[in-house]
Image (cartoon, rainbow, N blue to C red):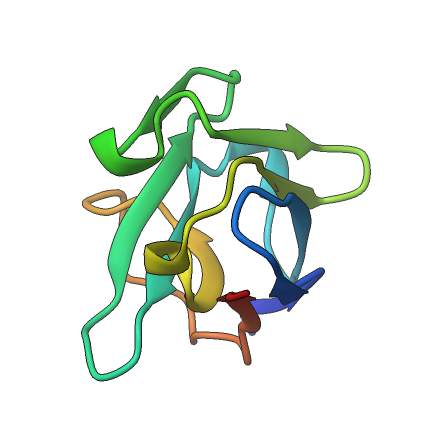
Length: 117
């Protein structure tokens, strides 16, 4: 059974930074294309950033230039560095496999990011 454990969220002022981490267990992580998703209050999960198994990255327009996704295959982890945070980035953040690469893993508990002054 694949498990994801997200961490690193918190309350931050607009313009601030956070670094999220997600540790994955129960699968061959190094071959997995991974992604970060977020779920704003009252909305569905939405894709934020993707990283292929060989490190190619892709971002939704709203976070380009502000967020950076990375992976550490030895630690079976994927990270999301978030800079210049805005109130509209407020959401619960999750990691999972990239869309259309297979059935989603069971969603973890996520990590809450709140951007507010």
